[in-house]
Every structure is written in structure tokens, then in C-alpha cells.
Length: 326
Image (cartoon, rainbow, N blue to C red; front, side, top):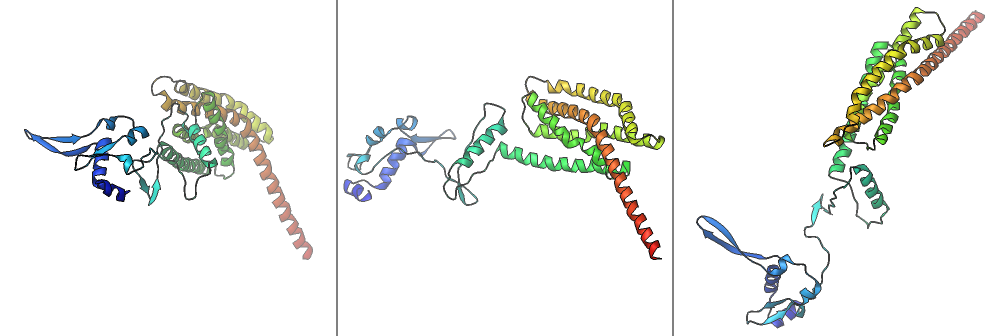
């Protein structure tokens, strides 16, 4: 109470200066010696010691007439948690909470934190968002997803030009999303999590896993131009003849990335997920290519034959109707 302070002969300035000296210290000036400035600072033992309410109630200041006045005589002093600095962001009050992880599972920890915050009944006008490393990772994953989509489109465009068809490249491209299963399994086997490095592996696999399918489809098209055999026999012959080259190519690549996937030691956690994701994705895509691509090829060609036959039947029926009218 300022009124009661005045009756005791204490001014707000004196109370403020005294409390500042007691808890933080105060610089009175500088002492200049031999072209060097030395700060003159007055402080107290409380600046470096924990303070409780009992200590606060025993604090006192000296008035101009040399009287000791306790702070509790004119104020009610209590310890309460508060912020030393109040920050604003976009004209709104903001509080930044920083945490340091003991494990490498940053995505898992962040998912649990965000899930907990979503279940909390926050007051009106209070909202939260992620920042720091997590925000940078999310932005990088978004950018890499766009790059992956562009790379897939470019691969499809090249195959359309090569095969001069629009549907057969889709059969080959089907091995790209399916290799994601192998990427996830590869990371799970090595107890790794999805990261920016794993996303780079997906971009790499986007142009790699289609190679086996291209070899198989292209050889099947070649046999169809050289033989009058039924479609299924041609597909089986093409799969049998290309089995060894496909397995040899996949095996050499898998053995090449295996040391990276099994890497240990300082810094291995940075590039090891790259080898693990490539190993899992390439392994699964090779099996999928040998099993799924022939089935999709035969299904597509039979479907095209049915559509062509149906269009021809419609065209023949229209001709007969025109002749009947004549």
C-alpha cells in the first residue's frame, strides 16, 4: 500500500531499489584504471541463494532517518511462478517450450506430445504448434514428397515415350507404391524410424525399382512380335528367361547397400536408414515384379482385347443396320 508506505516514510523508489539490490544486484557506475573500465556493482547474498517466503518476510530496508522497516509492514510478499520474459508472436502472447530427447525416436515422442495436447482442455484463444527441429523436418518431408511426385511423373513420361503406350507404363509404375511396404518393413527390422534420409531412399527407389519391370515388359513385347503363341505362354517364357538377369541385378544391388544398412558407430544413425530403406524397398519390389507384373500384364492385354472386340461388334452392328435401311 503506497499510502501506508508514505506514513512509514518509505517511497516506492526506495523499496524498488532495495529489492533490486537484494535479488538481482545493481550497477552503480564504472571505475576507470589504466584505460580499462571496471563496473562497480552492489549486490547481496540473496542473489545467489534460493528464496522462500520466510526469507521474504524477514527482509527490511533502511529509511533516510536510519530506521529499519520490514517489507512485510507495507506489502504482502509471496512466491509465485511467473515468466521472466513475456514474448509476442504476431501480436499474440507466446510461450516456447524446449525439450531435449534421450532417444532417437523424435517422431514418436512428438506424436505423443501432440496427442496429449489435443486431449487437454485449453482455455479459449490458446493454441499450440510445433517448431524447431520438428517443424524443419515436417517442411523437409513436404518438399521431398513434391520431389518424389515429380520424379515419378518424369519416369512415367520417359516410359510412355519408350513404349509408345499409355497403359503399359502404369503396370511398371505399380511397383513404386508397392515398394513402400518393403521400405517400412526394412526400417522396422532395423528398429529405425521414417526420416528425411528414408524419404531420400524413396526418391532413389522411384527410379530404381522400375528397372526390373521395364526389362520384363519390354522382353514380353519383343516375344509377342516374334511368336504367335498364346499370350500366357509368351508371358511365362518371358518371365522364365528374364528371371536370372533380374535376380542377378537385384542381388548385386542389395549386397552393395547391405554394409550401409548394417553400419554401426559414430554417425551411422545418419546414413544407415538410407541403406535400410533401399534394401527393404528393393527386396520387396523384386519379388513383386516377378509375381505381380506378369499378372497385371495379362489382365491388361485381355481387357484391351475385350474392349477392342466390343467396339468392333458395335461397328459391325451399325453397318448391318445401315444396310437394312438401304
